Length: 211
Image (cartoon, rainbow, N blue to C red; front, top):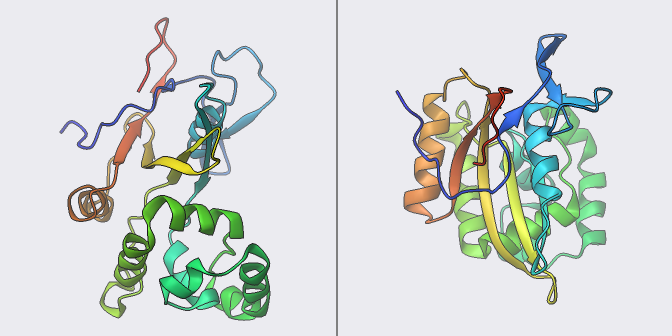
């Protein structure tokens, strides 16, 4: 079955080179041409690096990888009131994460970078940020994940404000989407009206492509 959720275009190449398997993880060369052979990364990092290197005068491009427990980590450290979280400074977020470190470690939740949390709130808006907090902290969904691999943003070069965002699920050539991933992409696109898509990598041939 062909992939759903293949738009909007990211305007980066989805061609990858030098596939290798290291300790059960598939990695590719970071170099989009496959000529510099010393640096490998997992698929998500390859896509994130290409997005960050995009060049356009009006925008600066950034992004973050999303852990499966992202929204649970934020609640455990910062609480569940998005209005309150939105008012926190970077220093306050970091202090709260430091205080919650033992609890996070016990639950195997990752610390989330404070600047990235602010980008999530700015890009989503407080209401949609709260919707995702509620969804992923619902006790009936404790065994359900599906969070996309990446949250990408474009900053207006003059104002330094988030101008637009993308959620991206990165897939290797024959890797299937799980039911939870399909459900989450559907929710993001059609319930929250956010831009969320799949980027399926293609292993190198003589041609290049953009996705």
